Image (cartoon, rainbow, N blue to C red):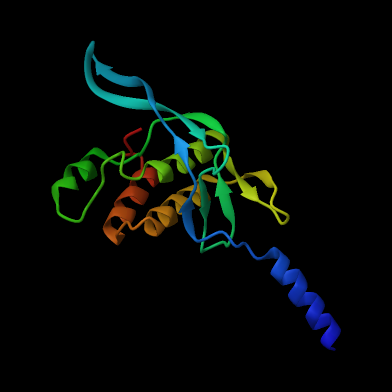
Length: 171
């Protein structure tokens, strides 16, 4: 009776992810250009395009408290930041409400990569990473959760989540 319990505990302990909840790690994301939106030849919006690159020694990782898994974007990709609806961005003047595109850059990086590749890298037992397909809803939930872990309040999370789930998103 004791032996199976000990075997179970040993197996359980080897699968525990010791990474802290939330975001950790490093990356670089310099602006390399702009995506312009125009109408009748008049540019009305310039959105920065960044070249995202993971730090090889300490790569950006998000550990979900909801799933218990660690997620990581690709080593390098192009990203355009947050999909916050314009009306919601206008609310950023309200104290305690931060909806600007660069505030949640690492969270958006993981989200953008997830959308581009239709999945993310997930840490497997033993420490190796495997690319796993994820649907958009799961990727959006990871964004919501990572913003919460990063200190985002309920209003910020809700507006950003609404932005990525709606057709009003500033893409």
